[in-house]
Amino acid sequence: MNKKTFHIIPTFILVCCILFLSSIPAFCQSYKWVAPIEDSLLRDGFYNIVLMPEVGAVLQDDYADIRLLNGKNEEVPYILKREDPFFSDVRFMEYPIISNKIIDTCCTQLVVGNTSKKEINNMCFVLKNSDAVKISHIAGSEDGVNWFAVKQFDVFYNSYSETDTKVLTYVNFPLTDYAFYRFDITDRGYWDEKNWEHWNSDNRWALPVNVLKVGYYETFLKEGKYVSVPAPTFIQKDSLADKKTYIRVRFNDAYTINRMRLNFSGPRYFKRNVTIATKQVGKSGRKPQPDRYIPITTLEVNSYSLNEFSFDFFREKEFYLIVENNDNHALTLNRMDTWQLTHYLKTYLEKGQKYYLSYGDSLSKTPVYDLNYFVDSIPKVLPTLRVLQSKRTEIAKTTHIEKVDNWYEDKLVVWIAIISFILLLSFMSWKMLGEMKKQ
Image (cartoon, rainbow, N blue to C red; front, top):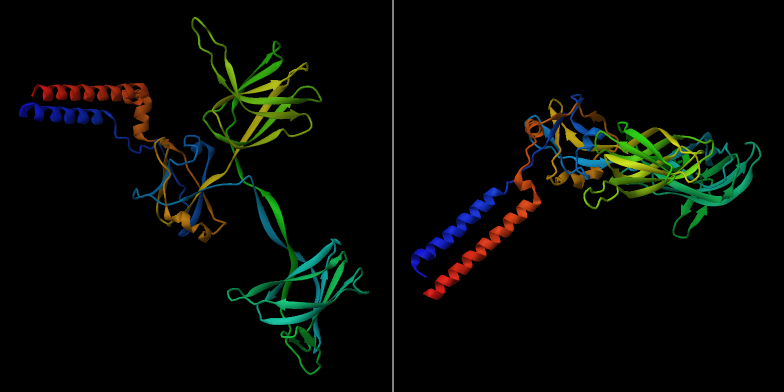
């Protein structure tokens, strides 16, 4: 192979590579929507920006394609949060303190009410921080006058705190249901911790502990916050052939649905299975194929409940409700209410700055912010801000109006181009080997 051929072939291959690569677009982030954040910041600090269903409807399933920007067009870090369907909330429930007396050179006498006569075997004392060990005697009463022994001797140990001005101590006793409990916390004598003994002494007087409140911790199961999804339209068709009712449900957009309530009317008593399904239209031609319904889940509706159902994730712009009527009269769907769990962005905002959201890009990836490492440092209760009316960006408007279908968006065309390029390289390699053999 001569020198001329040696230089021409690599040059040709390089040109082919450049032409091929240039034909593939350099995809960049192109957000289709923009929405300002309401300007009501009272101070610098953390806020929750609530994302309404209309925003989530054009986002990816994991909300990866949303960015928060300031007036300088700089990206602002945030933490994406979705409400949990249910979560536990721990509260301190107080018992009423009927009396709290400090008897000189004797004890602190505390009477606590249990008016509901709840069966209990412990109480939690909230004390002013101190390093003290006391002895208590516990008595119970139904009328607050006549007292009976509950626990004759108990160590009332107060473990002090290095970081808080208040401390907790639990007092355990036999399971009882008295209306009143009296705690005689001795302030006379001293506690020998080495021998685990208490010495009574009229001459040895210690200062009392400061009891702030008495109660217990109770765990409540609370429901997460939901926002209403715009109502859908639906068309119902009853089929006598297969004894089913087909209801086509259509939303304006592909909203995420986490809760659905169906209001049916019909016979006074009913209990039916309802399948949620998507429809696959059959192909027409020489061998036409019938429409297929692809089931997603099956629900049970009846005449004695709200017919409310929860979904971890359900997102379809159009779907069908297929009601199994069997030999019964068909039901009529009167109303459908839907909700989604609230999504919001936790972020630090500065007063006086303008902020807006830029979102809606199917190629965007989830942002990685340092703020995610400091979730525990952010207050749990935050002021909320709304997202104002969204607008399409100019690029999105142009694309929407012109409806340009680029050839490179067709996967088949891209694969044909790749295969053609490989064949071209193979042909050039074969030619090069042929030239080398001639030499």
